Image (cartoon, rainbow, N blue to C red; front, side, top):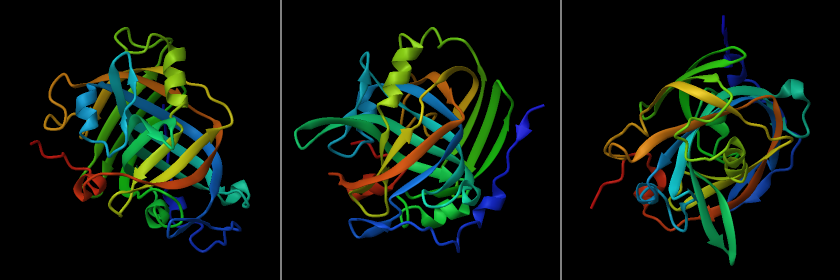
Length: 285
């Protein structure tokens, strides 16, 4: 039998705990500079997408990061445990289920080539994350319900946001190789592609401003998954992605990874206010 995970007890923990960290000023916000914890389980569900359709969703100066001519976007379904400021013991940490919609991007900054992920939407099981996201730590989070069942080699994650914007259903099992039709020629190529995308920029409530957050893992290991169910209100929307434009490519598993999150400078994007703050389908002209 698979195990069911509950994180409700963590929704109210730490609301009145002194963090022991000196806040870092990023723009006009005061952020906790770093957090640490454990990636208990991380599913990277990846779609290969025609670059022109991804570009429509990106603020400047981002452009899709390509692999063999295709863009990559996806959903990160991650359960975090013992998340806390570095000054606090693990026993004070939070646990939560989270989902992030991501697009692999690259850009030029101060004459240097950069790469990372653009994150138009974050959802979480934790009321605490919703409360402090974009205030004490980067990234606006939306409250969502998660139904998770898993064992050593099978995983089922169903998520529905409270605001009705986002629905995800993923079921997968461990396997020994990537799908034959994957854009990646090997597991090693896929692993390297995603490892290099450790810097994420998330939508904020301020038009044109993106919060920066870097993930550093104590180790990096991914395992391939065979996906039996993949449903997404984002990727299945034919107004956003007509048939054949976005196709499921592969899914990867990470688990039991010690990690740190580091606040990075906010990013000023060149875009309209509507695109900067909305998860809705952009209008076509």
